[in-house]
Image 1 (cartoon, rainbow, N blue to C red):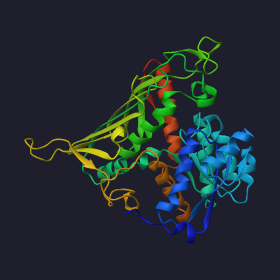
Image 2: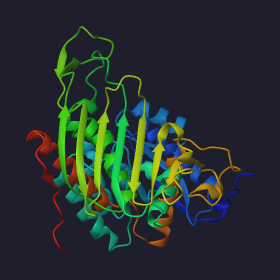
Image 3: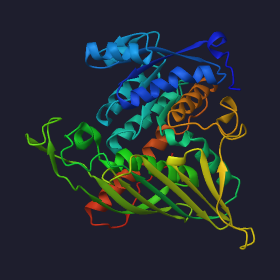
Image 4: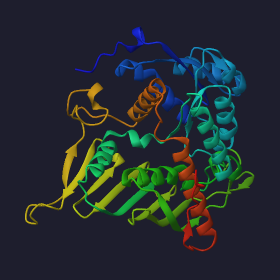
Length: 396
């Protein structure tokens, strides 16, 4: 039977205020609504207020998504006494301003990926998070795929040495929502709002997963990017109307080297026809290999290379047992989870970090590392695939 949580009745509240209520805001809302009803937590998340610019739309979103109040100014949301945690689900161009203001106001912060649009913004956010940590505050970046039980199990198996010395990491993340040249010039297609295209949107996840699963940062990259449709309609439903310039990439291909010496390869695109949200990860080591496909997210493929060749091969691990990561609170074995559960797990991990005062993972410093890789990829592509070192932090 599912785990019964008593946390909402016994634990002190943690007031959450969320900025933004579109796709990611809906996913985060699902996580906050669910987490205290599934996991026993030392704090009980309360959906205090959601913020958006359109008064009628944000009030409607509050009612639909379960938020107690609505605000139209994120500064007012931060100032609320019933908000202790600010969850940022806005386009990247506003992440730094909101996050730094929230941290300086004494709030904990969760910020969607990528952390920012530029390395300079990410550095400012990471510095604010370090200062806030001295005051007991927590700041985390939302790389939700880490919370897929199968990938969490993959990380555990790498840590336990089941793959031996890691040699290769491969990540592909393919979508198709920009195949149609009539798709309008949304904010994700403008550099000033999004920072980059498929690179930041999908590549940030790919980079974080590669570094997280391998337990090693990327030290350099060699990249190519391309924008296949350079002008798009300014308005939805008007394919023959006025056009605007697309200022981000449609696709990026890059290779890299990890500090451990392993090699990595990445393919991210939003123009792969037929691929809706196709994320695949493969890790190859001296003792074995692991492979994961988001379209089969309750499964992990494992090859144990220490077995006799005549019987060796990839086998499926169904990641639904109660001793698998996060599964202790969910359904009986064999009853799979879905995409939305990664946001519930993200909320759980953040609440536990806040309650214990521990460093969250991924931290803003982890988000900054990903931002530095994104910048190196862009620089390499501008230089026609020249190998480009990833900037390293200054010694403490």
